[in-house]
Length: 153
Image (cartoon, rainbow, N blue to C red; front, side, top):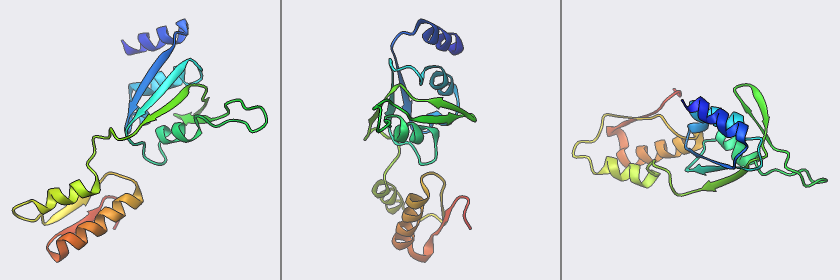
C-alpha cells in the first residue's frame, strides 16, 4: 500500500521528491507523504501548476523557504489536518503546467458555441479570478446568458 511506501521512505531517510499538482495538498494520499517528509531537508517538494490561495499547497509555497532573519535557518511551517509541521524540505514550483484553461480560452470556448448557453456557472478559482471571468462573460454574452458564481448570490 502507499502507507507502507510512506513509512519506508520516512524510516530509511532516503532523499525524496514529492510532486504535487493543483489541489492535491488539500487531501488524499499526498497528505501522508507531506506529513511524513516535509520536515526532512533531503526532501524536495515540487509543485506543478497553480496552488489556490488559502490551501495547504499555497501555504507551503509561501512559507516553505522562509528564513529566520537572525540565524538564516528555515523557519516556515504549515498546518496539515490541524497539526503544525515545520517545513525543512526544499520547495520548488514549475509554473505553466496547469491543466486548467485560462480566461481567454474559456471565453473563446463559449464564443464558438452554435447556441449560447442559458446559464454559465463558475465553480473553480480564486474569488477575484471568478469575479473577473464573470464580468468578462457578461460583457461577451450580454443579456442572453445568465452568469453565476457558485457560492455567491
